[in-house]
Image 1 (cartoon, rainbow, N blue to C red):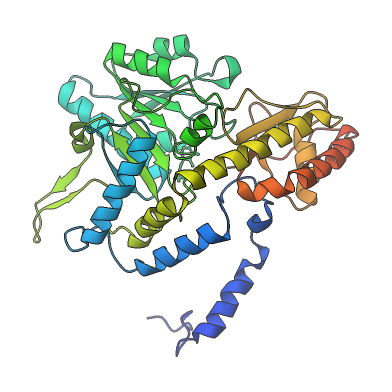
Image 2 (cartoon, protein in one colour):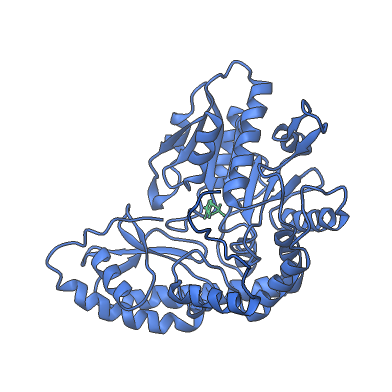
Length: 416
Ligand SMILES: *Cc1c(COP(=O)(O)O)cnc(C)c1O
């Protein structure tokens, strides 16, 4: 130890004091309970939050690395995977597991695709992935860690994956094709059925990034909204990721990755035996896995059930419709980019500088998501946004009138 005073308190501090300090620490955080956020937080309601918190606390100490000694976690994981498999068109052959989030699910699918290719196409030494430009950075992050290359292909009509361009980007080194359902930035669903046909025809692995839409998307479709099929019912889909901590409304640290078969899943499994303790064999990137995230996912999904998710789907789609109608009434040429099928939207304007409008909204206390190309404002609509759509639109109208008079475009940089 050094001479400097330790940042650890010498005798420890009391929990009441720390609890107060924690609440104080939250003071400048995003005001998500009142829907002031554009992304990052998915809150259904207080009852769901309570279920997640209690379930999480019950299993906070248990470790999903030790499924041998925690049959509870094994059963809950299998149960959650079965629920997601049902939602995403899987069958008895489908295999999958829980992960810590979308990034890990995508990493594991990409890793499995690379290992699958190593086995079946050993001639490919520099594997490539073909993805639309709209793909989430997680696929590049995975490729970066895995020594792979991503060819990002400009999007086509409606900001969706451009099939002919994607097909043209496939080389003898391509091992994986990628599509989103929906994309993060504009919320549009790529033509997954066509990508699946393409992948099948070329003998390639197709990963569907349904991190945003995977859980609630099927309920939006069941309500009668036109949501194209994007799951395992399409024979060319090899793997699909769906985040429970996004539209599953469970606690953070939970996502599912599904594979067409146990063989595809096994391709990504990591085994190691050359050390004192013996065989270490895991499906996940992480070693220790938080039992709380598994229990919270299990409890929230059973708590909501079909009816609960249908209710959330109806709420967010109604709020989206009111937002889209309201945008058209504002003097400023505001319009949604593309035709997003779900609750994530991006909107822009040719009549005013949209980032100046975003600055004015920020000044009014809204946390605003920005999109660089096409220039726009991004919003993931959740149930907490439903009651404040009118307030949001009223502030947008005021911000638009200020933005119309702006001399120069806002120089603000876009960040995730
Ligand atoms: C959020 C997201 C991811 C990454 O998921 P994390 O849970 O943030 O790791 C990947 N793809 C899409 C489309 C996403 O929205």
